[in-house]
Image 1 (spheres, rainbow, N blue to C red):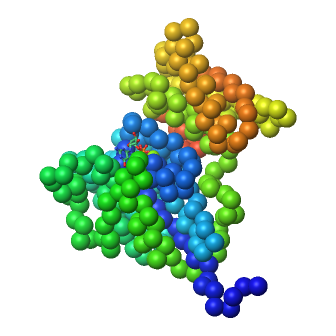
Image 2: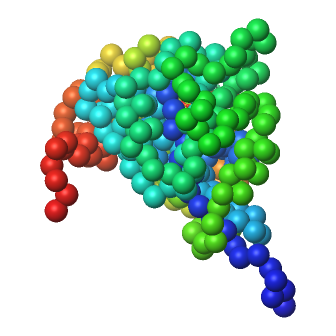
Image 3: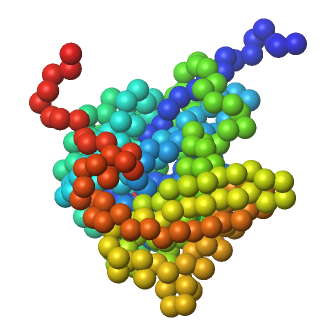
Length: 307
Ligand SMILES: Nc1nc2c(ncn2[C@@H]2O[C@H](COP(=O)(O)OP(=O)(O)OP(=O)(O)O)[C@@H](O)[C@H]2O)c(=O)[nH]1
Ligand SMILES: [Mg+2]
């Protein structure tokens, strides 16, 4: 029987916001203890708001990983910034994640979002301290630590400083419901995550503009006895990009495929057969209807009053 004195269950939302490549997805994965969000050494890897869920018997924290904030130059990026902004609504704690080795101040759009967010607490989380030089303060220029409720120095990669960060976050949670099943680690399903895993391998095995020209989508995901059958379409915007992804004698695509299959099997815990098809969607990043087909909504119009 429950002890009458037991503390109530507590829960809350934490958004992780910062520049591209700061390590937001790495941090979320490290806390949740599972690879939820894809990670790469190239900026602008994350394209969506993705929840990672951390549950114990006493509390549940829903972490929201977001696309890295830039001053957008095209429609796709406008849409990504809108997705990041949406993640800030109704949050309890905001982590501003900054890279200890960054020598540039935050950009205008990041400052604007930091101003606009109304969390109950703001944490400045300085990441990659494993790479910071000992002879200088590892806080990037243009960031004033006194504007935050607390400051943390962590390494998401080496899992340093995370216990204290979680402890302080937990202390701020209020009594609340269990939003997700305790076994659930993400708000995204296996289909979404499988397409993301393929995109991560494209990021890893191609260079220059190719990663940004790619969109991946699951065409089939069938749980079969013995082996799941999964088919993923890799869309590119120019015909020449097809050849680069396929590679000499199909070598690049083969590597992408076998690494992605292993990643998907790790995620689902079931053996899988993975089929990849490279397809052309001419200039999809420049076309409003193609962007909409891929789920990238136009950003909300500015200056319009809410009815
Ligand atoms: N040395 C070091 N590298 C890190 C650390 N955290 C992340 N990285 C690396 O930084 C790169 C970017 O990591 P991501 O987690 O993809 O960064 P992100 O902020 O999610 O990037 P976007 O999704 O593009 O906004 C990857 O190569 C990571 O391995 C850290 O604590 N130390
Ligand atoms: Mg990311």
